[in-house]
Image (cartoon, rainbow, N blue to C red; front, side):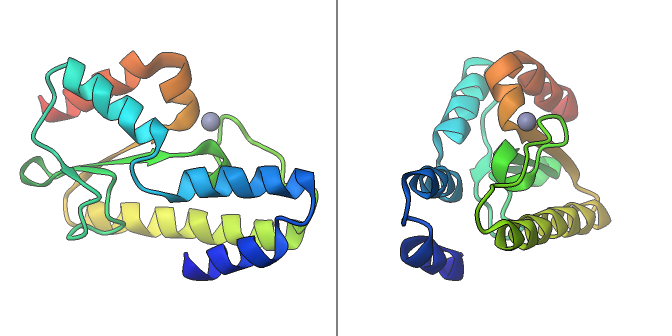
Length: 147
Ligand SMILES: [Zn+2]
């Protein structure tokens, strides 16, 4: 992450188009993103509580973790984690960099899910577009996993 931020400051803010990209990056890299807060609010409304946030003891520090229930939830931005539904095109500038970056993100995601599965955890990936289009469905899948 640190490397990436350095790259961001030094290179990606040189044109308006790239400034937009770096804004997206910033908003996706920080914890407690709007997306996460939105989803947590929905969980709260559905009386789903007692989770840990960004739990470092589990692989990948799941955004939301229910350690006793062995349930991990990752809230993934479609741009960063390459949502299969949105299938977003690669940025036009620094394409090779992005391709590599996204590849590493995806590999990391896969690895973390595999590690969690090995530890008998359930993993739910909630995509940004799902939260925006049908947050109730995502909440329902969490409720189901906890039932
Ligand atoms: Zn998506």
